[in-house]
Structure formats: structure tokens, C-alpha cells
Image (cartoon, rainbow, N blue to C red; front, side, top):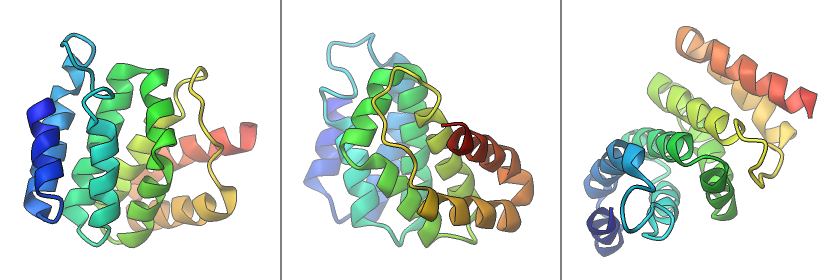
Length: 162
């Protein structure tokens, strides 16, 4: 994990490195907590969010980064969700979804990441900003219906029940 994060930090402007590093972190996520340095301690979560912020316009970076966040949180639990939220990860995901309305893969991975983040009651998460999130969920359902409807509905239910 550390070498992937080091590559991300050494080449912040190289979209292909950011994209492939996010893919690598996604694949390494199941081993999180079983190695000496966790995803959090290595700076992986912050590096993924930084890549998203630096390359908002690149759908490949956004797709892989959202998938990486979903995998890291899925395997790391509420603690990881809290870390993602603390480094502006929720905003980065919402920005990715908003920036790529016709990319079904970005929409799907973004919604998967938001679902993963809201799966844990023990996570210290801000509520999803309804004014920003609801229109994005509606657009995702409309533009990528088969890939995103169930995820968007799940998120909508979580927003209304809280």
C-alpha cells in the first residue's frame, strides 16, 4: 500500500498513475488491517480523495477512486467511513457524480461508494446534503437506470429515514 501511495504523491498530475493507483488500492482493500500499515496510516484514503479533487474532469480517475473508496470502506468498516468523511471524501464523491452525469460507470461507482459510507451506524459521518444529493440521485436513476436505480433508491431511503 505504501508504495502505491508514494507513487500517487510523487506524480499528482499524472492522471493515468492516479487511475491505476486507485485500482491497485481497490484490489488491496481486502487485505487492509492484515498488514503492518493500514490504508489509513499509509495515507491511501487521503491520496484517493486528493486524486479525485485534482482530476475532477477525468471519468476514469473518478470511477476508480470511487470504487477504491467503496472497497476500502467495505473491508475496513465504520472507522474507514469516518476517515473518508474527515478528508472531504463525501464531497469528492458527490462532485464526481455531478461532473460525469452521462458516465454510467462513474455514476454506479459513486453511488456504491456513498452506500458503503452510509452502511455503518458507528461511523462519524455528516448527513448527505439533501439539496445537492437528491437531484444527483434522480439524474443517476434517469441516465443510468439499470445500473443505478437500486443504489439511488437505497440512498434516498437512508436520507429520508434520518
